[in-house]
Length: 451
Image 1 (cartoon, rainbow, N blue to C red):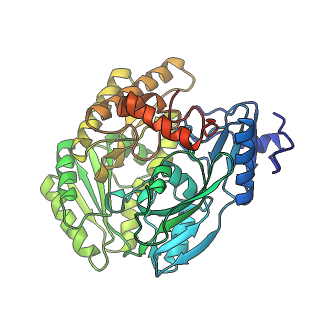
Image 2: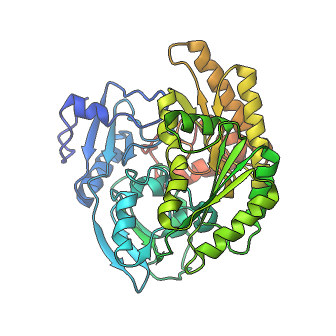
Image 3: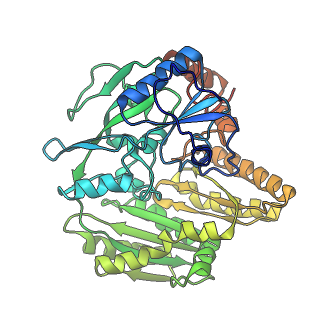
């Protein structure tokens, strides 16, 4: 692809470097042969790319750290990848107003660390916190381990600066704690996966820093008992800051990586935390009693933050443990909390029917599971069975009153099921909204709104 001279920003010329920007972390992602990469240095670069792309009808793929699991940031043939990692400044941290103003390239953990130095807290905590960017978090409305208490990214976005196709710069939302003037366009852009505009600045809401969390770890000999425990925790007046679940297959994967003290024969492990100021010890003792009453086989309670981290270490090891097992579809479905263990049983049945291994783990406190469906990359039949199992897991989640994605987004991987959840008429309305912001369809075409 030869970029016209009217695109007055530098592109990446090294083919090996460019190829690295062609894919994300989605299964089977392959870079096309013909695309360009612009690594934006400032707002002006983004404006220029969006102006030129709109005029020339060139597809644009907005991109951050390329950690998407759904294919939403893979390059498009003949298009331009617009990477915003370089827009990584934290221009404001305001303890009085409880906000920060940051570029989309700021890494999630970097923002957390910066505001913690001011006694503040930015709650969204994706498992990829160490490398994912705030812009990507906004694009997918990312959640993470602490959603049960703190919610998702959208709950902490007060305002945005966005560049639209054609190069217009718009601002949405408010820096003030309250503001109801006009429609909530901020909420519209959050979770839009780069299909409406390119985020170039984010004003985030901050909270006072909580206490260092304490952890309770409980093992269960049955999914029924684990379900009783999850429901009891959700009914607590003082909601835990974290409720994570590992099924038997997840425990086996973690223990195969290293010995984290989990019994391989248990059916489920629950990890529960409290970070409530001045009450963490009181809360974890209360949670331990609830877990015991629900039928936990063993319960361990941390006495201090160091022990808390040790108890949680097995959960943090899950991602590398699953990576070590080989290729997989990494699912993201959310169901009502009361149906969580039903979904696990269904997933186990799907695995048995297709002769595959499915690991069922995730955020039990909000009903969000991340099933991993493993396959043999060298065996086309194995991959076909895994894709069929993927379809059946998504369909099962919808039948339980759930959703096809809790936090990873739709991208290309789940676009075929969006109409199944929304209905055709609602999908057409959403396409019409996209067309209002992107009349020539240049932003992430073919993603989300399958057409």
